Amino acid sequence: MDLIDAFLDALWLERGVSEHTLAAYRRDLSAWQDYLADQGDGLTTSSSAQLVSWFDQRRAQGYQLRSNARLLSSLRSFYRWARLNGHVDSDPLANVKLPRVTPALPGSLDEDEVIRLLEAPDTSTSLGVRDRAMLELLYACGLRVSELVGLTLDALNLNQGVVRVRGKGDKDRLIPLGDEASAWLERYLRSARNELMSDPMRPALFPGRANRAMTRQTFWHRIKAHALTAGIKKPLSPHTLRHAFATHLLNHGANLRVVQLLLGHSDLSTTQIYTHVAQARLESLHAHHHPRG
Image 1: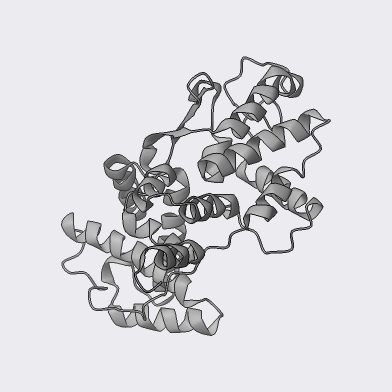
Image 2: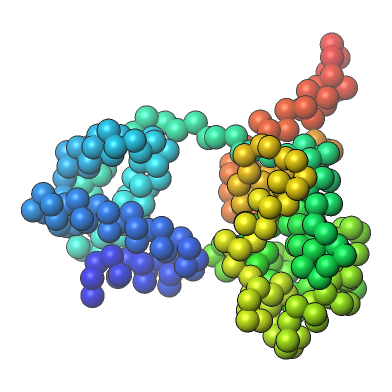
Protein backbone atom coordinates (compact mmCIF):
# COMPACT_ATOMS: atom_id res chain seq x y z
CA MET A 1 0.00 0.00 0.00
CA ASP A 2 1.15 3.54 -0.77
CA LEU A 3 2.58 5.27 2.33
CA ILE A 4 0.19 8.20 2.06
CA ASP A 5 -2.80 5.85 1.84
CA ALA A 6 -1.53 3.86 4.82
CA PHE A 7 -1.12 7.04 6.87
CA LEU A 8 -4.60 8.29 5.97
CA ASP A 9 -6.11 4.91 6.85
CA ALA A 10 -4.40 5.08 10.24
CA LEU A 11 -5.73 8.61 10.81
CA TRP A 12 -9.25 7.48 10.00
CA LEU A 13 -9.08 4.36 12.16
CA GLU A 14 -7.32 5.85 15.17
CA ARG A 15 -8.64 9.41 15.27
CA GLY A 16 -11.83 9.27 13.24
CA VAL A 17 -10.95 12.38 11.24
CA SER A 18 -13.42 13.62 8.64
CA GLU A 19 -13.23 13.09 4.89
CA HIS A 20 -12.57 16.81 4.51
CA THR A 21 -9.52 16.61 6.82
CA LEU A 22 -8.24 13.46 5.11
CA ALA A 23 -8.48 15.21 1.74
CA ALA A 24 -6.45 18.14 3.09
CA TYR A 25 -3.73 15.80 4.39
CA ARG A 26 -3.65 14.03 1.02
CA ARG A 27 -3.20 17.33 -0.86
CA ASP A 28 -0.34 18.39 1.41
CA LEU A 29 1.49 15.08 1.29
CA SER A 30 1.00 14.65 -2.45
CA ALA A 31 2.44 18.12 -3.09
CA TRP A 32 5.47 17.29 -0.94
CA GLN A 33 5.87 13.92 -2.66
CA ASP A 34 5.75 15.58 -6.11
CA TYR A 35 8.41 18.10 -5.08
CA LEU A 36 10.67 15.33 -3.78
CA ALA A 37 10.17 13.31 -6.98
CA ASP A 38 11.45 16.27 -8.97
CA GLN A 39 14.54 16.19 -6.75
CA GLY A 40 15.00 12.47 -7.33
CA ASP A 41 13.91 11.65 -3.78
CA GLY A 42 10.92 10.16 -1.98
CA LEU A 43 9.01 10.53 1.27
CA THR A 44 11.35 8.22 3.18
CA THR A 45 14.60 9.80 1.94
CA SER A 46 13.84 13.49 2.37
CA SER A 47 15.82 16.00 4.44
CA SER A 48 15.09 19.13 6.42
CA ALA A 49 17.16 21.15 3.92
CA GLN A 50 14.81 20.08 1.14
CA LEU A 51 11.80 21.21 3.12
CA VAL A 52 13.31 24.61 3.87
CA SER A 53 14.16 25.00 0.18
CA TRP A 54 10.61 24.03 -0.81
CA PHE A 55 9.10 26.53 1.63
CA ASP A 56 11.37 29.26 0.23
CA GLN A 57 10.13 28.36 -3.24
CA ARG A 58 6.49 28.46 -2.10
CA ARG A 59 6.96 31.88 -0.49
CA ALA A 60 8.42 33.17 -3.76
CA GLN A 61 5.30 31.86 -5.49
CA GLY A 62 3.09 33.89 -3.15
CA TYR A 63 2.08 31.32 -0.52
CA GLN A 64 1.53 32.92 2.88
CA LEU A 65 3.27 31.96 6.12
CA ARG A 66 -0.01 30.55 7.46
CA SER A 67 -0.25 28.16 4.51
CA ASN A 68 3.29 26.88 5.07
CA ALA A 69 2.64 26.50 8.81
CA ARG A 70 -0.42 24.34 8.16
CA LEU A 71 1.56 22.32 5.61
CA LEU A 72 4.38 21.76 8.10
CA SER A 73 1.85 20.51 10.65
CA SER A 74 0.56 17.93 8.14
CA LEU A 75 4.06 16.73 7.30
CA ARG A 76 5.03 16.47 10.96
CA SER A 77 2.00 14.27 11.65
CA PHE A 78 2.99 12.05 8.75
CA TYR A 79 6.64 11.67 9.76
CA ARG A 80 5.72 11.07 13.40
CA TRP A 81 3.53 8.18 12.23
CA ALA A 82 6.19 6.97 9.74
CA ARG A 83 8.86 6.82 12.45
CA LEU A 84 6.60 5.01 14.92
CA ASN A 85 5.80 2.43 12.26
CA GLY A 86 9.38 1.90 11.10
CA HIS A 87 9.14 3.56 7.69
CA VAL A 88 11.89 6.09 8.52
CA ASP A 89 14.74 5.94 11.03
CA SER A 90 14.47 9.59 12.05
CA ASP A 91 12.15 12.54 11.57
CA PRO A 92 13.64 14.81 8.87
CA LEU A 93 11.49 17.71 10.08
CA ALA A 94 12.39 17.55 13.77
CA ASN A 95 14.51 20.71 13.67
CA VAL A 96 12.52 22.66 11.09
CA LYS A 97 10.82 25.72 12.52
CA LEU A 98 8.80 28.49 10.95
CA PRO A 99 8.12 31.94 12.35
CA ARG A 100 5.19 31.83 14.74
CA VAL A 101 1.85 32.57 13.10
CA THR A 102 -0.33 34.98 15.06
CA PRO A 103 -3.89 33.62 15.07
CA ALA A 104 -6.06 35.68 12.75
CA LEU A 105 -9.12 37.20 14.31
CA PRO A 106 -12.12 35.61 12.60
CA GLY A 107 -14.37 37.88 10.58
CA SER A 108 -17.75 38.44 12.15
CA LEU A 109 -20.89 40.54 11.92
CA ASP A 110 -22.38 42.84 14.51
CA GLU A 111 -25.84 42.04 15.85
CA ASP A 112 -27.69 44.44 13.53
CA GLU A 113 -25.94 42.94 10.50
CA VAL A 114 -26.87 39.42 11.62
CA ILE A 115 -30.54 40.45 11.89
CA ARG A 116 -30.43 41.93 8.38
CA LEU A 117 -28.90 38.73 7.03
CA LEU A 118 -31.44 36.52 8.80
CA GLU A 119 -34.31 38.60 7.43
CA ALA A 120 -32.96 38.69 3.84
CA PRO A 121 -34.61 35.50 2.44
CA ASP A 122 -38.01 35.95 0.79
CA THR A 123 -40.16 33.89 3.16
CA SER A 124 -43.17 34.03 0.85
CA THR A 125 -41.45 31.17 -1.01
CA SER A 126 -40.56 27.65 0.12
CA LEU A 127 -36.89 28.23 -0.71
CA GLY A 128 -36.93 31.41 1.35
CA VAL A 129 -38.45 29.63 4.34
CA ARG A 130 -35.83 26.90 4.03
CA ASP A 131 -32.99 29.42 3.85
CA ARG A 132 -34.38 31.44 6.79
CA ALA A 133 -34.61 28.27 8.89
CA MET A 134 -31.04 27.32 7.95
CA LEU A 135 -29.65 30.76 8.76
CA GLU A 136 -31.52 30.92 12.07
CA LEU A 137 -30.24 27.47 13.01
CA LEU A 138 -26.69 28.30 11.95
CA TYR A 139 -26.62 31.44 14.10
CA ALA A 140 -28.58 29.99 17.05
CA CYS A 141 -26.28 26.99 17.41
CA GLY A 142 -22.92 28.15 16.04
CA LEU A 143 -22.76 25.24 13.59
CA ARG A 144 -20.18 24.66 10.93
CA VAL A 145 -21.78 24.79 7.49
CA SER A 146 -20.78 21.14 6.94
CA GLU A 147 -22.61 20.23 10.16
CA LEU A 148 -25.69 22.16 9.10
CA VAL A 149 -26.08 20.61 5.65
CA GLY A 150 -25.37 17.15 7.08
CA LEU A 151 -28.27 17.25 9.53
CA THR A 152 -30.98 14.60 9.28
CA LEU A 153 -34.57 14.76 10.48
CA ASP A 154 -33.92 12.54 13.48
CA ALA A 155 -31.21 14.95 14.74
CA LEU A 156 -33.86 17.55 15.48
CA ASN A 157 -36.00 17.43 18.63
CA LEU A 158 -38.34 20.41 18.66
CA ASN A 159 -40.19 19.16 21.74
CA GLN A 160 -37.02 19.40 23.80
CA GLY A 161 -35.68 22.34 21.79
CA VAL A 162 -32.33 20.75 20.92
CA VAL A 163 -30.43 19.53 17.88
CA ARG A 164 -27.90 16.69 17.89
CA VAL A 165 -24.87 17.63 15.84
CA ARG A 166 -22.09 15.33 14.65
CA GLY A 167 -18.88 17.34 14.54
CA LYS A 168 -15.23 16.68 13.86
CA GLY A 169 -14.00 13.24 14.82
CA ASP A 170 -17.61 11.99 14.68
CA LYS A 171 -18.26 13.48 18.11
CA ASP A 172 -21.88 14.29 18.90
CA ARG A 173 -23.06 17.29 20.89
CA LEU A 174 -26.52 18.53 21.90
CA ILE A 175 -27.17 22.22 21.34
CA PRO A 176 -30.23 24.22 22.44
CA LEU A 177 -32.12 25.82 19.57
CA GLY A 178 -33.66 28.92 21.08
CA ASP A 179 -37.15 30.25 20.37
CA GLU A 180 -36.54 31.95 17.01
CA ALA A 181 -34.76 29.01 15.40
CA SER A 182 -37.39 26.60 16.76
CA ALA A 183 -40.23 28.71 15.35
CA TRP A 184 -38.69 28.88 11.88
CA LEU A 185 -37.87 25.18 11.88
CA GLU A 186 -41.48 24.37 12.82
CA ARG A 187 -42.73 26.53 9.96
CA TYR A 188 -40.24 24.98 7.54
CA LEU A 189 -41.17 21.40 8.52
CA ARG A 190 -44.89 22.14 8.45
CA SER A 191 -44.96 23.17 4.79
CA ALA A 192 -41.80 24.17 2.92
CA ARG A 193 -39.86 20.93 3.28
CA ASN A 194 -42.69 18.83 1.85
CA GLU A 195 -42.95 21.21 -1.10
CA LEU A 196 -39.21 21.01 -1.79
CA MET A 197 -38.93 17.21 -1.50
CA SER A 198 -40.82 14.80 -3.69
CA ASP A 199 -40.09 12.12 -1.07
CA PRO A 200 -40.48 13.67 2.43
CA MET A 201 -39.33 10.40 4.05
CA ARG A 202 -35.76 11.05 2.89
CA PRO A 203 -33.52 11.68 5.91
CA ALA A 204 -31.90 14.98 4.84
CA LEU A 205 -33.26 17.85 6.91
CA PHE A 206 -32.43 20.46 4.27
CA PRO A 207 -32.79 19.21 0.69
CA GLY A 208 -30.80 20.40 -2.25
CA ARG A 209 -31.31 18.80 -5.62
CA ALA A 210 -32.78 15.36 -6.30
CA ASN A 211 -33.97 14.99 -2.69
CA ARG A 212 -30.39 14.83 -1.43
CA ALA A 213 -28.84 16.95 1.30
CA MET A 214 -27.66 20.35 0.22
CA THR A 215 -23.93 20.74 -0.36
CA ARG A 216 -21.71 23.14 1.55
CA GLN A 217 -20.92 24.98 -1.65
CA THR A 218 -24.60 25.50 -2.52
CA PHE A 219 -25.44 26.92 0.89
CA TRP A 220 -22.37 29.16 0.81
CA HIS A 221 -23.64 30.64 -2.46
CA ARG A 222 -27.02 31.17 -0.80
CA ILE A 223 -25.39 33.03 2.12
CA LYS A 224 -23.54 35.35 -0.26
CA ALA A 225 -26.73 36.07 -2.20
CA HIS A 226 -28.63 36.91 0.98
CA ALA A 227 -25.77 39.09 2.24
CA LEU A 228 -25.99 41.06 -1.00
CA THR A 229 -29.73 41.51 -0.45
CA ALA A 230 -29.06 42.64 3.13
CA GLY A 231 -26.53 45.23 1.95
CA ILE A 232 -23.68 43.64 3.89
CA LYS A 233 -20.38 44.64 2.31
CA LYS A 234 -18.00 42.95 4.77
CA PRO A 235 -16.04 39.99 3.41
CA LEU A 236 -17.83 36.83 4.52
CA SER A 237 -16.69 33.26 5.06
CA PRO A 238 -18.71 30.07 5.51
CA HIS A 239 -17.96 30.45 9.25
CA THR A 240 -19.20 34.04 9.55
CA LEU A 241 -22.36 33.19 11.51
CA ARG A 242 -20.44 30.69 13.64
CA HIS A 243 -18.01 33.46 14.58
CA ALA A 244 -20.89 35.84 15.25
CA PHE A 245 -22.54 33.21 17.48
CA ALA A 246 -19.42 32.87 19.65
CA THR A 247 -18.66 36.58 19.76
CA HIS A 248 -22.20 37.63 20.67
CA LEU A 249 -22.47 34.96 23.38
CA LEU A 250 -19.29 36.25 25.01
CA ASN A 251 -20.41 39.85 24.64
CA HIS A 252 -23.57 38.97 26.54
CA GLY A 253 -21.71 37.28 29.38
CA ALA A 254 -21.41 33.61 28.39
CA ASN A 255 -18.63 31.54 29.96
CA LEU A 256 -15.77 30.65 27.59
CA ARG A 257 -16.00 26.98 28.57
CA VAL A 258 -19.69 26.93 27.65
CA VAL A 259 -18.91 28.48 24.26
CA GLN A 260 -16.21 25.84 23.75
CA LEU A 261 -18.72 23.04 24.34
CA LEU A 262 -21.32 24.60 22.06
CA LEU A 263 -18.81 25.08 19.24
CA GLY A 264 -17.47 21.55 19.65
CA HIS A 265 -13.85 22.62 20.16
CA SER A 266 -11.74 19.87 21.70
CA ASP A 267 -9.24 22.39 23.11
CA LEU A 268 -10.13 25.56 25.02
CA SER A 269 -7.20 27.36 23.40
CA THR A 270 -9.05 27.19 20.08
CA THR A 271 -12.00 29.04 21.62
CA GLN A 272 -9.84 31.64 23.37
CA ILE A 273 -9.36 33.55 20.13
CA TYR A 274 -12.89 34.88 20.67
CA THR A 275 -11.80 36.68 23.83
CA HIS A 276 -9.95 39.05 21.48
CA VAL A 277 -12.99 39.47 19.26
CA ALA A 278 -15.30 40.12 22.21
CA GLN A 279 -13.20 43.03 23.43
CA ALA A 280 -16.24 45.23 24.09
CA ARG A 281 -17.55 42.76 26.66
CA LEU A 282 -14.17 42.47 28.36
CA GLU A 283 -13.85 46.24 28.65
CA SER A 284 -17.37 46.45 30.10
CA LEU A 285 -16.59 43.76 32.69
CA HIS A 286 -13.38 45.55 33.68
CA ALA A 287 -15.15 48.88 34.05
CA HIS A 288 -17.90 47.33 36.17
CA HIS A 289 -15.83 45.15 38.49
CA HIS A 290 -12.42 46.85 38.82
CA PRO A 291 -12.22 49.21 41.82
CA ARG A 292 -10.77 51.92 39.60
CA GLY A 293 -12.88 51.10 36.56
